[in-house]
Amino acid sequence: MRYDSHLWLSELSKGQTRHYVKGDIVFRPDKTENRFFIMQTGLARIFLCTDNKELTIGYLRENSLYVTHTRAWIEAMSEVQITSWPLSQLKNLMTVRPEFAIASMQEIGGMLHNTIDIIEDLAFRSVESRFARYLLTEYHQQKSTTIEVMGNTEILASLLGTSRQTLSTLMNRMLKDKVLERVDRRYLVLVDIPYLENLVAGMSAS
Image (tube, rainbow, N blue to C red; front, side, top):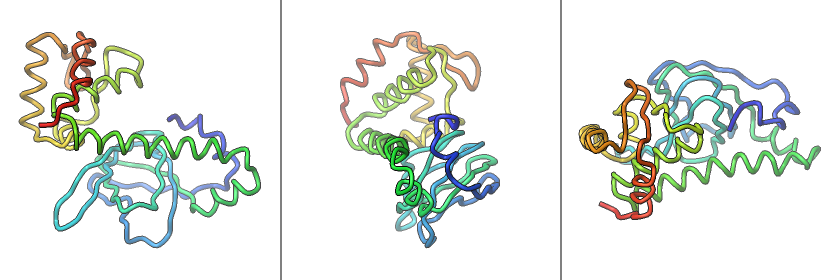
């Protein structure tokens, strides 16, 4: 989702802009006010936390939209800037301008859809299949066989629900087998897309 696609936001009053540094908690579930926000810059992690255990369920990147009325925490993984509005403003907008309701709900619903995909991957797919699905998703979103990989290996491993060592071993094997090619530390070329599609279709958990 791109910021300039959120046309309904122009109907709202000026939002509240805040800056965070790496490691800051952008949102915690014990806050009483529900808000929605746009990630203007940076990378943030969405995770669940209970009994001193954490489960990463997704990441927010530039232009991502998020609504805070969940039990998830948000942690800044880099310098982050967000602009937020009270959820009540969105509700009022839908009352006054109902034509914007569908557009805003579609975008918020897209966020929920992505989260469910991640949970499904963790529950039912092998690490290899999860990695292949991630690569194909980025291929379709970036519209290129040369994709920019999110963050570093540790961040990506956390998203895929595996260890950095396991992911590095898997990636090195795919590089050796000419499934992938490395441009540099940030970019990979998807050489054998049918192979990746077959991995996703297998959908076997490990």
